[in-house]
Image (tube, rainbow, N blue to C red; front, side, top):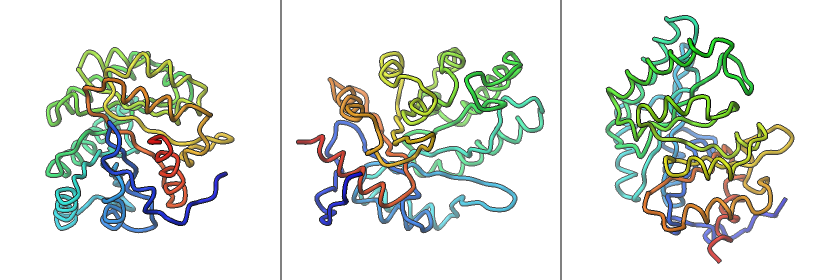
Length: 271
């Protein structure tokens, strides 16, 4: 592990890359707006990780939304919206599918005033692993029906379906048929033994957002210091080669130390 530099000003990278550099809305142990204020002069995009349950919710109220929009306007900042994780749009129970879609639609409606760069959605499997469901026809049909509702409230190209722990080829027909975009999660690919460059070769033209985070001993969302040698440079090079499409590269970590360390590594790519 590298030691953190004391001069954090040296690691400010806003507007320095041919893509929008981002991170999550949970880098410091504070609320949504406090994180956005802390990050606004350091990155180009912030992934708002939103959740809603009977016990707890971090969905922004009207005053917070106004503050988020004002901060974005003043700092040339964009937001990507990570739709709630506790959604199961391919579930065997129709009521669970319906509630999952409605939860996503509420968040989309709530955050519309922020003019998000993209919305990130998971097609969760019935269980973890390389095959998302023993009933693939039912599972895929549930996601098709869900997408048909979601694209009524958001442009298809703004809805990015994230790579998880199963081969993306299992859902690529849904993504393609509805004109959706892709969120390539490099950390997920490393965690499940996939090859990130093969995914980049296949899917980069349709990708709007890339999540990147280190992995060690089956733990992900670590500092970029935990990436394999050459991977970070290889990815950023591809994003810069004649890029005509604006993309977001999100350092998907949830810790200030890991964030600062990752910025140091990103800065070295500029030399």
